[in-house]
Image (tube, rainbow, N blue to C red; front, side, top):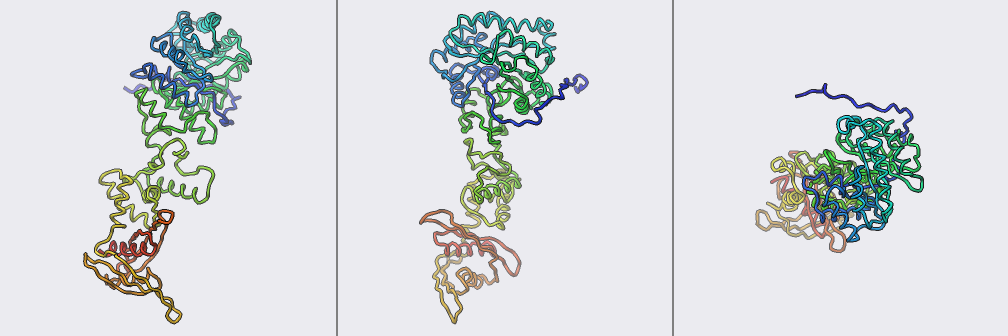
Length: 554
């Protein structure tokens, strides 16, 4: 049933002093991966210890310096995983692990048992502060909720006295988006004061978008409001943990950075509860596309996908930003044409910047093959087919030939769907290069002469017609004209060469040339292209003439 009357708008922030709309992202935040905690708890089949270790090693390799590894006090497998990291000495000296814990004594005590032997650890405590949970879950007023947070701080301080490593405290007012700003500020200020944070011993205040409840600009307002009103701001690393319930997690995260957030918690590919956490890779690649160093090793997306899919048993959507199989693929003819022209323009101009229509970054920069950029189906156009022939096989088809050959491929795609580059090339061979019937060129002897100041070319062409070997002789103002005149006599038709193009297919002493002949049947006005290939440019041109004649008249 459709009951829109059951829903109400969430309040906005009356904050006219906001400055974030005029800012730009200038640098990457402190990244904290929550794949092994928030991401893992949302899996249908949570990772076992060895899978967690594989994921942990990937995160280290990617350059994460803060990694939330779980809730060791709540699960034996998470406790054992943490101990494996310690016992096997898998935590690099420059990586800080983070564990989550509710503000309860038995859980905090167990957490300290789990982190024994770790040199540096972030103890992440939290409690819900929003109006709804205060009412229906805790049945507590504001003071009661604040006391839970302060008791958590006191318990961490109690047990860290006997701990042999450094503890960084992180506090999250869970469901921050549903918490009145003045109350969120009151709780966070109280936690900062109780911890005794200062400029040299900072605390992490993490403001999570636990459930997206409204538009990203409102979250940005809340972040900037908190950033400007927190009492001891210089003692605080302001963090955020966006979720994606409304599908705007990336926008929320990026606007939060504009609004003063210095740290970002998220997961690879946005795995997490419900619609997931913010996708850290998405934000990092966005930064990369703007020339901002993301401070993560994201150049091999294939490796990241491989480990992620194997350990989580999740799959990447084919349209997922940057990582999906189809995101660097163009089926649309107009898109293909623009990509083709953009790539050619970059090459010709030696442009130091990546500027190609429809491709915000070079796929090769993140370990994607360049070949699948253009894929051909019934919606594709002449530009895409030409792009495939150039990129895959080195044939730079004349502009006038693009539509002629694309029409051949489109007829195939309308029957079978997508057409692979290999199939496209086979059709090119069949329709042009191997178009040798009924007239098949065999050889040509060329003689140049100067008769009374007029330069002429004489040709003696050996060919086969329907398998029978024959010879014709002819003359013209060059080899192409002379052979064309001879073919006119053989076919009994007047023809005209409208255009001639050639280029090298390969380089070096064994280079082959491709020749393209645009031929007109003078009587009917019909035109077509022929293509010839040979290590000898003249021979490739003659083959192109024979190809065109066979296509035009037979």
